[in-house]
Image (cartoon, rainbow, N blue to C red; front, top):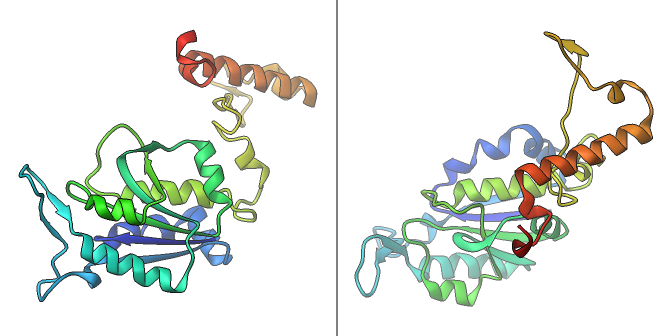
Length: 229
């Protein structure tokens, strides 16, 4: 999979992509990430990227020309299955959306800044708008890192145990059940007997029930429609 990212601050993305699972995915050649510095497409001698918004109001807006030139240049050499703008007013990111993105070949992510990007760029190029939550970040870089991490771990061959991703929270609209490791007795707190039984059917039934109960208690919205809550 190829993921291109347009950003004003490439340095913010260096660490997330050079450690742990994403580094492993890159080293295996399963994920290629290319970061494009929007500053290289700035306007005039000062390489201007932002300007005041029409109609007045606080906050600057990323100008259309630099983004237009950058995206157009990238599209000359690559067909993007999705051009994604990270924005608070986008669709809230879910595991289902991540699953869909993981099946694509080429993704382009646009990191916004200030008050966002000129609306005309959204209308011309953007095919999907994604929010990582109902809050505002200083820029789209951290949101892009979250999205790439969520996608990268689903690429076949990235995880040592590929079934691990299939049992993550939200994959079946349930939160993950409790997990335990050694010792079986820690300060008088014991691991549930069923997990020590070796009876795989009973273990699976226990995990399913625990996942359901945890979801019901903590995230009932995943189980019921709003009118049922």
